[in-house]
Amino acid sequence: MKTSWMTVAQMRLLALLGVFALALTACTERNVAGGTEAESTIALYVQMADGTPASTARVRILPDDYLSSGPAENAWNETDEDGQVSFEVRNGRYTIEARNVNKSEASGAVHSVALAKSDSKVDTIKLGDLSSIEGYVLLGASPVVRVAGLDRYVVPDSTGHFVIDSLPQGSFDVQIGDPEEVHSTVVQSNAGDTLFVDGSDTSSTIKVVMSKTSTATEYPESDWSAHENLLKQLQGYAAGTLGAAGLADSTGKINKVKGEICIVTTTDDLIDVVDSSKVDSLGNYETSVAVAAGSFRECAEKEGAVWILFEKSGSYNLQSPLRIKSNKTIDGRGRDVRITGMGILTQESSNLIFENLTFTAPAITARDTTSRRALSIHNRTHHVWVDHCTFEEYPLIEVDIKRSSYAVTLSWNRFENAQTGILFGLEPDIFVDTAQTLTMHHNYFANMEARGVLARHGKLHAYNNFFYDVKNAGIECTDSASCYISSNAFNIETPVAVYRLENEDGTPDESTLGFVKMDGNMFGLGGEELAGDANGYELDYMVLVEISNAELAARIKNEAGPR
Image (tube, rainbow, N blue to C red; front, side):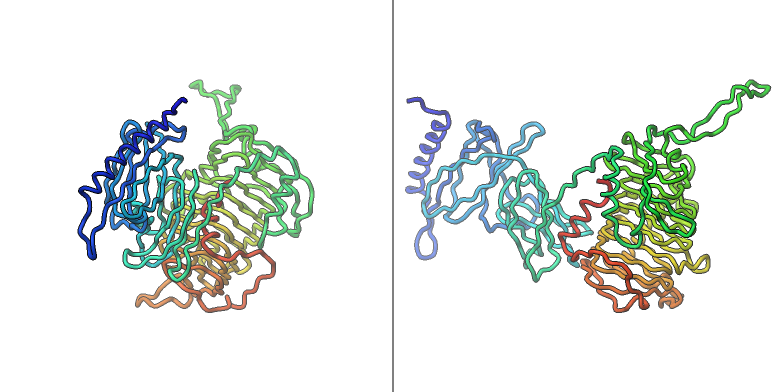
């Protein structure tokens, strides 16, 4: 009968165990209270995923209730050339972790074992792909995050975010809290998973959320049903916006009509045109600036309803501000479309959709009032929907909505790396925007130096947004603005502020007071529901508002921005 290699290896381990058992009987009995306690032996055979021995793999065994009190406390053992390693331990329950790195490829496994007095065991561990646990703790302090039975000790960052990476597949008891008092949950982690763990409430069970990987939206291929499906996702004040599927008349009413399709075929914007028929005395030809054929600008400046699609991914650098005309859908689905340069402005425009775009790398980066916004919605512009876009790296403000612009919805956008994400209304001594209206939902705010939103006058409805990292306030509702703030997640110290200015003695300037109504919000680092009725502000439309919890916050963080 033919003997397999694995059988031979196990026979070697059994022989090794016999030696250990003999040694234990003779030498390893220890005096303990009430008698003696003998050590037990576990011999391991560590395999790669294909069944070959994992030589020089690292293996560590710890009690299954072990919790690390600092980074890298315990040393690893190493397997021999046949993938074998053994341990002598007292009886009890243990967690064994095995790791192997071959060039840039890492693999691992965890294994649980229970040993009774003087047990001798042989076990096989097969290595597999690694995973990670990611999450955030919405607590006032930054507690330690640990995994029972493994030497893992992680301190969340200032926003409460943490990552425990290089974990094998398996079931883990995640412990969140200070070393003296913890609460925990069991997490099942599979290959390639990233889990989101919320430890926001020490009085309740930790919530574990599977991350959702958004599938990139397919290129619409000029299929009008894809445009219709997009419109079905619109909620809030911009409801009724049809983009390229409608035309706004002089009264502002939008009538349904199928527009033309304009496909952007070049990343060029403005080009120099040489007139060879005109030459000066030095032989220099006269030049003029023209809009490049097939450019984004050419499509955006067309009259009538236009559905703008992009033939290819790329950076579309606007060399001067683009003053977009009404009745347009700018649709970046299925492409990585980056709008750079001088930004987009509206001027008494209406019926506009901005979908699946990234606004980045502005041409003006100085921190002064000339700094160009990514998107400026100005001068009685109405019915504008901005959906699944990213706004990043703008020095002051990323989106502003002002001068009596109304019926605007911002949804599923990322606002990052700026002083303020959204400016809603001008200072009262410049212009009082009492008619402006804005719905914002499922937006994500991070790395804001001042605030996520500054609202002055008008009506703001903010629901199901996630303010993750904002220094001063998530929403500043000031200067008689009416703000209904419902079911948002705030992982910041000051979720909502109602005064824009203070007097010299530090008291609030009553002339800059705003009015809020709050309900159903989730608070992490501080804050509470402020009492008020938003100066009588009531919604005149219906929307689906989700309960604000860890799962919603994780989904917003993952899925906001281009798809």
